[in-house]
Amino acid sequence: MDKTQISRWFNRLDSRPAWQFLGILYIARWSLIIPYMIAARFLFTEGQLSAVSASKLSEINPILLFCNIVVLGPLLETLFECSLPFYVLSLIHRQKGKLPTRSWSFIIISAMLMVLSHPMLAAIIPSFITGFCLAYCYAHFAFRGFGYAIMYTAGFHAAINIIGWTLIVFGSNT
Image 1 (cartoon, rainbow, N blue to C red):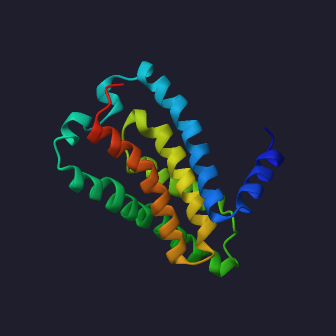
Image 2: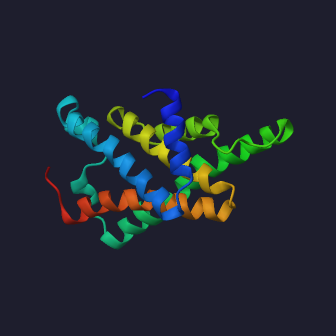
Image 3: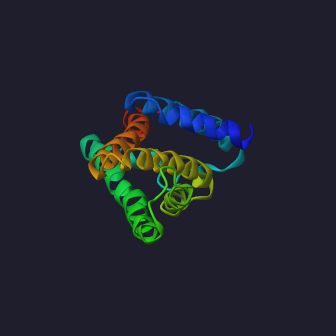
């Protein structure tokens, strides 16, 4: 895939209605994460794969765990990893002109913040991919307004985290 094809793919993605945009981005993210997760089982030890074991998390009240993993975590991470860098870059770009619609500098900075907030060797690649998708989502909706950007990005993140919550609460030995 060359640069023009990638740009066309993003242009087509951006032209979709919100639900299609989110659905395609969600599927694209999982299509990159799942092969990595399979390979990681052979490349890393169990301790390297998880900072906190699922068995310890499963001892926490499922409702409290849900609130933390599916509600608070995505909201706080969206504020820290997306809203803050978007705001700072907006201030910088305000002096130079308008922030570009697809600000790759914002997307990369935001993805790197996601990596820094998940400091495990095995989590670097999936954290970057997830951070990239979250930042792209945020940038896409930011021009509609701050509320839209927060709502769609935190919702997108919650839809990712609910898979992990489900596996923790209902068990997965694979």
